Length: 300
Image (cartoon, rainbow, N blue to C red; front, side):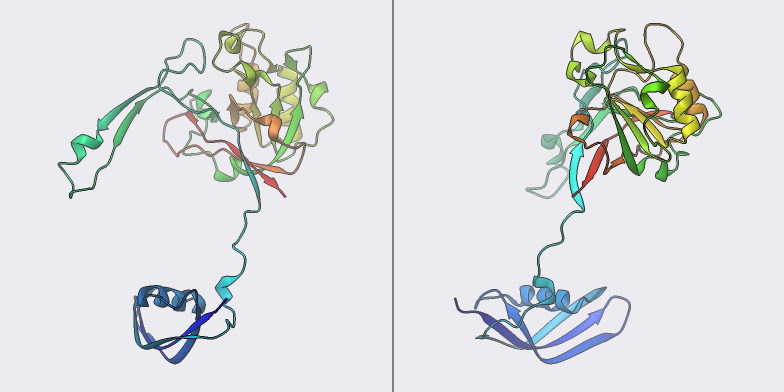
């Protein structure tokens, strides 16, 4: 296959002042027909130029010649690992926790109405959502439980992003409560401790909100605080038992400044170790709970 190169003169100006001139510069090109705009872009990328204002080319010649190789022509950068969704999709009217209203999703500006506001062929949709913070897969900040606790805007980013995952597999357990004894084998210091109960299989059914759902016991919560856990999550309807009114796991974890992540899903796709969790909510002042797009990065 015939390969092509281009030769040209170039004058570059920069947005922050100054300029650059090149004479007889030669560059590999993908084909015999290449636009000056594409050639200018190749030139800028090859030299790694930043804050470029304008590139003017002159005396452009394209000719058959074997490629010499571009710095930018190597293999594309790859992600550090595979991404795994750990969140439920939010839909209008869905039930997350029994008794709480489902989200209302309505148009604020329809595409049809927007056409009269913009140039021909340009349209937008602006939608409105009304929901309680406890919708879908959500994060509880200390403010959710304590008036003087850190709200969503006060939770440090390093408390909810890029955390090493400690996966506690509990599927098949005959006991709904996750006790300190079940957690004892794990080194959880600074980690996102994710309790994989498999209860997410009931999501969207009446069984999901049942009082027999898995939960973290009071002594289990105290053990995680003592061991220095960074975040605690569960793929069940609540981190606490809903059979009564007490909420010891919430109270203990949030008092220690440990965020709680509820209604996870997809934990069966995670390895026991080697994953990192991201579950950052928006920074909302005087608000305690908000949905997150929780996901894990799996190291290859």
